[in-house]
Structures are given as C-alpha cells and as structure tokens.
Image 1: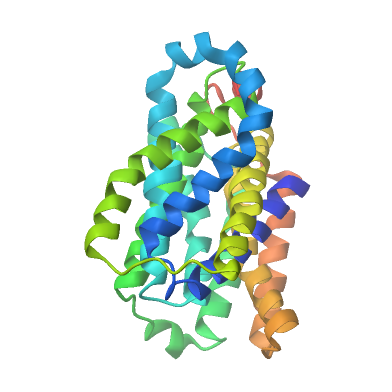
Image 2: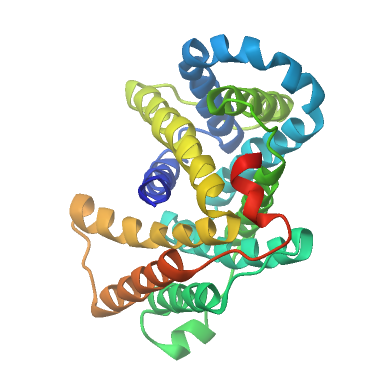
Length: 301
C-alpha cells in the first residue's frame, strides 16, 4: 500500500509542475522530453536485464506496444493538452474518477468485480472527491461544467484505466525495469511524429534551467518511480483496488497547495479528505477481487 500511496503523490507534483510550465513548454514537447529523460535515466539499470528479456519481448511485442502507446504516449499527451485549457486543481480532481473507470472496465473486459466492502470503499472515496469538487454545496456540484481541457483530461484518465487493467497482460517473468524501459521507448516513439508537427507549426519550447530541472524531476519521480510503484501495486492488489489510491491525488494536491503556496484549507477540504482516506482504508483492509483468474494475477505479473 505504501507504493500505491507514493505514486499518486509523485503524479500530483507532475500536475502542478505541468500546469506551471504550460506557457513555456507545449504539451507534446512536455510529453516527449519527459519520457526521453526517463529513458536516459532508466537505460543504465534496464539494459542488462533487457538483453536477458529479449526473447520475451519478441514473443509479447503486441501487448508491450499496446501498453506503451496507451499508458505512456496517448495518456500523457492528452493530460498535458488538457492542462493548457484547465487548472491543475481540476486535473488532479478529475483523476479521481479513474477508480470508477477501472472498476467498470475490469468488469466489462475481465469480468472482475469488487466485494461489497470494496465497492463501498470506492463509493465513500468518490463522495469525498465530490465533497471537495462541490465545496460542500450541492448547488455548486450541480452547476459544475466540464470545459475542453477537462474533457481531454477525462479521455486521458480513460487511457490510464485501460493501461491499468491491461497490466494483466504484462509478459510473465519480464523484469520490471525492462518492462518500463520498453513501454517508455514505445510511447515516446509514438509521440515523436506529433511532437515534430507541433514544433513546426506550434509555439516554440522555451528552454531555461528551471524548465530543464523541472522536466528532469518529473521524469525521475512521475515517470520512473511512480510507474514502477504503480505497476508493483497493481501486481500485488489487483487493478480495481489499486485504482482507488488515485483518490489520494486531490488530497496531496490540496495539502501541497497549503504547504507550498499558502492556500487556505476549508472545512469541506477536511471532510473530503477524511472520506477519501476512510474509503481507501475500508477497501485496502477488506476489499478483495473475486473473478475467474484474478487469484493468479500476482504470479502472472
């Protein structure tokens, strides 16, 4: 559970930094260079195991290609595109619909379902997210409207949900660093042609020391470490339960805004955070995936 707690924390930082760099770094450039830096960081550690995993990669190249394109390329590109039209706070909050998407897709695709306790945990945490989103007011919640950026982020979250349940088809026996290195290369290669078009016809990227260090930090924490932690957490707990931990993103986002930016924490924030943590506790303690084949997911991954 600690790994699944750290991953949303690192991703919360990514959303804040991504929004902060939106004026200097176009979205596809952000996606491309974030993962290029991650590939460079991973290479010294992944290449030795990659050689041993080459036969596995050849046998399972289709599933690796799909996971790389969806989970690295499309997901990240849509997220950074969305941040050009909406706020980081909206982005972090909208991430919290991932658990619902994962539960629905797991049922549709894998015929997995959560126990009643697990479903109750998802519902409780979602109530916490809605409490924060609505500022504790039902009328504010009913008046909420999605803009173009929000819709792009929702599509990005759908891609991440597909990636999460798709981890079931991660090649058995393939080392984690080899796996992450391969899907990073695939995803970055998929983004590269679109980055070239953006560079030719869109706004130029502004390179500064701040930009360089920010992208390097995102590459290390939000790409390498967060993906390793998330993949391992999905392996241990299953997609549906692991997905619930995404609800921690608004918690971390609000706390970071208070600690770093001095923003005020209102009573509805506290209530929402309490509901989110209660839902995660209930699911993490009692939720169990019960579906054909789910019991052997750990050995397969």
